[in-house]
Image (cartoon, rainbow, N blue to C red; front, side, top):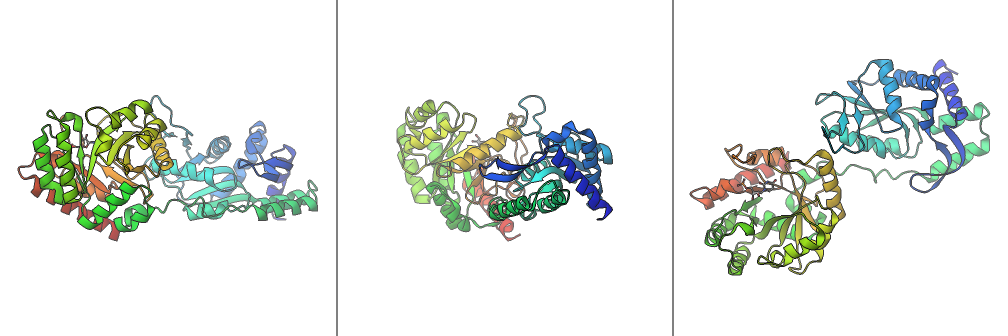
Length: 475
Ligand SMILES: O=c1ccn([C@@H]2O[C@H](COP(=O)(O)O)[C@@H](O)[C@H]2O)c(=O)[nH]1
């Protein structure tokens, strides 16, 4: 046996002795029974063994390039990562499982620079999902992750899944090697080896289930090709309008007079996919505004969209959506809602009386300077959106948050030459929001409404946005 193998064999036996590897009948995280169970948490009670593990991992790490940082997958691999960091002198970062709700609100703790290469350290890999969760947050913080060193590869398909997601796994031991070492040391018998082999053969994780969303898909697919991915009928209609009218422009009709709104709708109508209103700012609002507005929308083939930003308990939202003077649910196919109050808001919009086809843009990020939304909130918003595919048309955001081709990204804060207003609004150019920020639909308000010729301005925005979209999908 080579020197390295002797070390590994001794290490395997020590793991067995401290009960970090057990044989019998154990329930796994997903509820199925396994004859072999590895629980490396216990290793913190054995500092000498921890040191051996750090030495073994350090040897493994030498063949990997571009390591600026280490990050242990929480929680078991955090002390292991620390031990390797102390041994190698490579600094460490820590991933929080939840961003704290006070102070810095960071998901990644420690000092790092954008573009730093971060090596992942993990104890046991089955499907690789824990590593991918950690990678997701690290990459979100601007770090590069290409490799993971792990103590034990359970050989259930995790390595392939990680590879499919751009992560090369380097394992100290495979479960087969571990079993062999333990059998040679007479810790287990042939029957147990066979039992474990049979178990592994019958429990391979499907390598498709954890494949990243097709990263390029949303941004690379044409709107037409994205139609089959939508589960909401207004989203389907919107994509069809965008494709046929060749426009991704949504005008924010933030005007306070009914006649001005109708005039604007008439002028910009041929160039837009949606007209966004704040109906509660209209001084002379009367329901009589709605009939001609709907008529213009039908004639020019665009969608009426009330930017109500619902954020209350479900019952109140139900009433705000369908009752009162505005009766939003009777005319606006699209509305916005904050995710802040959770599912109740979405259930209310889903169940309220009104138009049969309705859709929601969920606010994940805001264009306002100094807004209080943090990474964790964005993540939870995304999760909520995925839970309501039949209602959610997409996300209001300033960045590409999802690769799901069935979700549309609506991005406000768009102007050609202006960077901000005096009340915290922040603007990006149409090209930047499409090519860099991932916008599918751009909301332009004052860039058009304050122009002397709104129709000309709208056409200009429409053309620039469409060209940027064409460039994006052909790249
Ligand atoms: O993050 C957000 C969400 C919504 N808006 C709305 O978009 C328009 C922007 O108008 P401009 O005149 O182009 O600034 C406005 O109706 C906002 O309520 C946003 O700006 N940012």
